[in-house]
Amino acid sequence: MTTLHVSNFKVRELQPVSFTVNNELVCLSGPSGTGKSLLLRAIADLIVHQGEVFVDDKTCSDTHPVMWRQWVGLLPAESSWWLDKVGDHFKQIDHEYLNALNLPAESLEWEVSRCSTGEKQRLAIVRLLEQQPKVLLLDEPTASLDADSVNRVESVIQDYANKFNVPVIWVSHDNQQIKRLARRAFKIENNEINEVTV
Amino acid sequence: MNVISLSPFDLSLAALLVLALAFISFILKLGLSNRIIIAAIRTVVQLLLIGLVLKALFAQVSLVLVTALSIFMLLIAGREVMARQQRRFGGVWGYGLGTLSMFVSSFALTIYALIAIVGTDPWYTPQYAIPLLGMMLGNTMTGVSLALDKLTTTAWQQRAVIEARLILGQDWRTAIGDITRDSVRIGMIPMINAMAAAGIVSLPGMMTGQILSGTDPVEAVKYQILIMFLITAGTGFSAMLATWIGARRLFDDRQRLRLERLS
Image 1 (cartoon, helix red, strand yellow):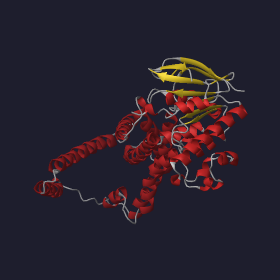
Image 2: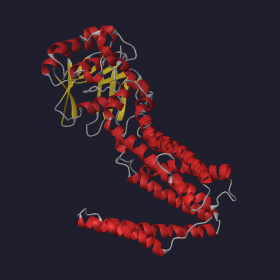
Image 3: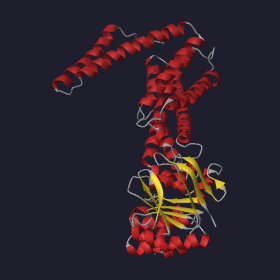
């Protein structure tokens, strides 16, 4: 089991915050532009921040950045692809995730430019899980998906989290989804991050 | 040497052509007449000045004076590289990055050419040192500014991709690898094209000048080959150096992409 602990953590204009996420799924909400993505990006050590993040007893500042980002798997709101073929972005391929997200095996042969936003988003989730992150930070992972895909993504993430005992922070605007997924939730408002009741 | 000396009257015949061009531009309302005349006057003044400076410099072979003029040329070239950047590095890096890269490769290669290849005595003989360095700087300047401009503008546009690659566990070098390769390539292509076209499409200026001044064409060609090789190597190395330092500077010690370092 893995624990994510954020201690005296400060990014840009957000107030300092401390919280712990054990192997559970926690939702993060708040109006647009309040710094939800900022917080996730800082926990993944992509932007400058103050304070410390722990994955179990390992601190961010003492861990090699490449290693840290493999542990702390961030899914950005919009997926990025830099090679022509989908499959070229994968190191190894586990068809289980593809199946679970309703993606055919041939999808790895697809041209990235031909894929829809939703297909790219589901492929990006497969790509992230194959790195076997110890922590998942998901920035609106289902915003661009239809109802069926939303269900599939929710169960794939929940299965992964349960199987590997992974703490998950899931950014969502959808109260129904938050109720479905999480027992704990955080909300960012007026630069403050507070725990709210689900 | 059988140079036909040009008299002021000869040059004024050429100036008449420029005046005619300015006049016709005026009639056609191109709005360029003033600029043509000012540029023409600048050419005359700047070249006469450098002619006088070179004449004085050649008269006394002084390492101090050659060094002073070389550094002056380098600083101007550095300023030019900075001015050609759409998104330049902030602070001292904006100026220092291009200047340093040009300094390392242009000066090293020029000194190498003077000592090991041409074998002038003393090695800093200004008649050789200054024109060689001038041609090196003029061309590396183009290479460095093209490469840096490509690097910084592409990194800016592809921020999401670079960060996505970092997220997926790539180190900074890999995450920006495609962009650095493209940047170096862009910096080197003009010189490679120039080498390929030399003598067929274009007669290089230096060689033409030597031939006009009565040098045996084959000798002139040999010097031109030397210059082309030096310039190509110098441009390539300085483009690589500038791109590498620039790419490194885009990331901090935690391998975070720091685009705010560009202004």
